[in-house]
Length: 210
Picture 1: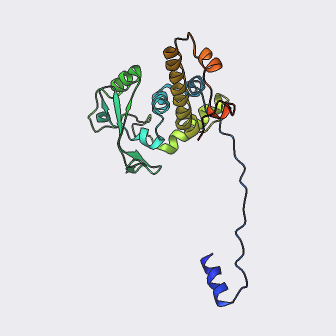
Picture 2: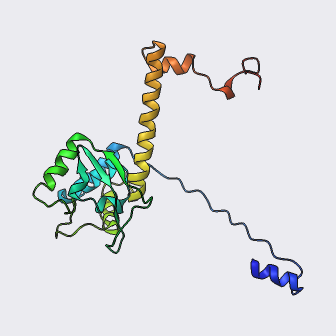
Picture 3: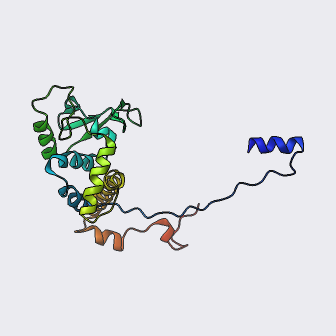
C-alpha cells in the first residue's frame, strides 16, 4: 500500500485502491471432556499413553511436554522451562518464562517411577527407540488414535484448548458452590435460580443510578 500511495503522490494513479475485505468463516471448535480424552488415549499403544496423559493433565504445549527432564519433577510439581521444535532442537518456551504446575499425585508417582533410574538431565519421555519425542510425532500419534476413537479432534484442541475449558468449568462450579455455601443453600441451583441477578437483567427501577 505504501508503494501505491507514493504513485498517487507522483500523479501516476488517481486513487489508491481499497483493500478487499475477505470474510473468513468461523470454524466450530470442539473441546473434549476428560472422558473423551481418555477414549483417545486408550487407543494408543501403552508405551505412548503416559505422555498424552501428562499433556492432558497440564494443558501445556506439545513441544514443552517433550522437553521435560527428570530434574523438572520436584515435590509433586513439574517445572516447564524449555521446548522442542519439530526439528528436534531445544529452545525457550513460547512465553520465555518458567512455569510451575501441580501434577495429580498418582501421575506424579508414575512419572517418578518412569525415570527412576535415569540421570537428572535425562528426558522423562522417550519413544520406543529411546529418543525423545518430537511435537510432530505426538500430532501423528494423536491423529491416529483419535480416528480410531471416532473423535476427530486435533492434538492442540484436544489437549490444551480442552484443558482451558475444563479448568474454567471447574472454577465456575467451585465459585457457585462457595456462594451457595455462604448463602446457606443446599445447592447452587437455588442460589442462581432465586437470588443471583446480573445488572443487565435488572428492571429500570432496580438498577442503581450511574
